[in-house]
Image 1 (cartoon, rainbow, N blue to C red):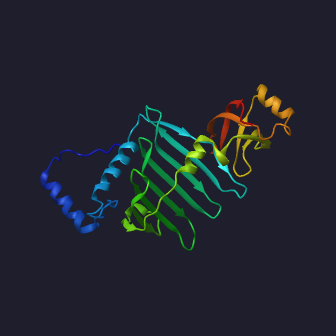
Image 2 (cartoon, rainbow, N blue to C red):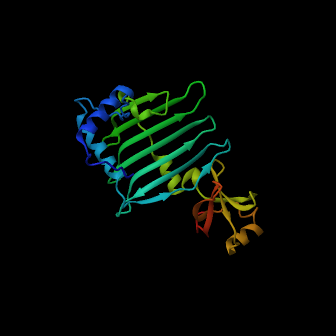
Image 3 (cartoon, helix red, strand yellow):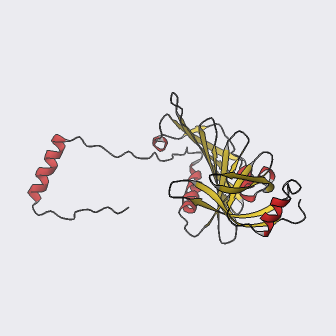
Length: 266
């Protein structure tokens, strides 16, 4: 964002008059400032964790990987993002969860040499009567135990204006977010069938607990085979390459790029 400032005025006396009139006619609104995190004397060294997280957030050389977009039988959805350094190690992991109850949960994890150093969990609940917003930050030792947990709460979206307070130590597990990225466990990409919607054809992959759909236009040899053997091919493990797409009207979907069988794991 570019902001232009006037460096000089033609008549200094005019400047004084304008400021004086402004003070008398218009109230001065100070910009809302985010609350800084203040650690206790016991945990003052935890500022190192915050500085590291800010360094990772500002690192433009990291490669960002996006997971498939999964949903369960009830309609709850989740997806993950990973940031990888030149050593091919994950230094930041993010999971987004949308629940049918109206709650939105965002979890962010930071790693150093494969060890989790810090986690953030942000909850947004847009209830008409009792909206609820919270953030929790936990800091971890080399043994993955929680050193300290800070929390803040608000009834408005301006959560960043709230003050963090020491709270009960709470560990946020990152394993599910990692499983979404790696497509393991409930997030394996096993063939489940085909669907048609919005004038598009989709292949459905996943497990009995989590599924995702990927749109395709061209029938590749594997797709042709799967269509012919849809029932007998169910649960075959597939390697899926995709690209997230957004149309001019805002409709988003996952477009299939490539599809392969995963050998010896069916």
